[in-house]
Image (cartoon, rainbow, N blue to C red; front, side, top):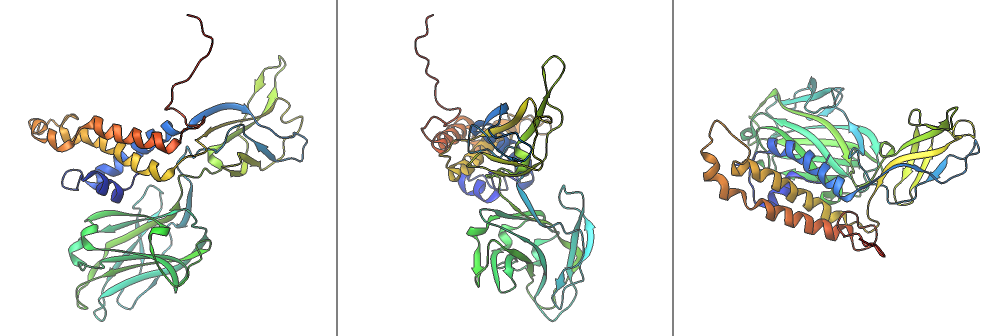
Length: 375
């Protein structure tokens, strides 16, 4: 999940792994993403939705749109790696289940190389068909020792609509690290082979390349988990809580439990319910909790803004403002390496100010104007 990404953060901030590790960034990014989301989103509590309550109508509309993705979890699972059913190349060790690399609570796929006839191993399968339009590919990959891989095309991932029509991304060894790696790339930023259908992606593939055919990799020294397609700029049904309100004996509203939502259209502010409310089940009306964003939102600016906010948070660790009692004197020595925290924030807010636009829905950045007020 996230607006911020490791690759963008490194390019925009010049803060390398020697200063702040990827593991620390993976802890910081969710905080930065959540803060950015709260800045650009305006919450609406218990708004009465527009639409007929007649026992047959299931479509209702919010007053404000576009609806915001506030859960940051618009995820399409491609393969959870909970079943060892991948096809392998000649030298590849048969896939097997191992402990999870992610928080999905399942398993991962253990891989390796035992044969000595090829200088690579591949694992592939036909997966659940998914529409990848506007989405990022994310995969968790564990590599115990990257020195076992070649300098150039050390690892390659593919996702496509067929084995000869796919999106592809190669990683040099210098782009990888010992331990957990997170593939995180927009599909349209990947290379292509053939003519993949982005709306029907049902093929996944991963390859590891070693220096010579004689090189082997112990089973479990490379693992993968949780292939998924994410789009946190688009809300899903979890981003709208809808209630069919009834009334008690005194006429007070009773919310009850949130009702099931079938689909949601961001720009139209349209919410389709699973069951149609009636004048009995929703005698008090149909109400909703949701958030909305500027109708001129520039998401290309939101992503770097999240990186700069993450840099602001990270700078306190680098500068020693966050106490490290094992090397407390290092705080002074490292302070200049962090950059100016206020400068990171200035860049962040400048980007967000432009991202939300100048119209009336540019939330959170312009002063309110009040006419005819007497003090």
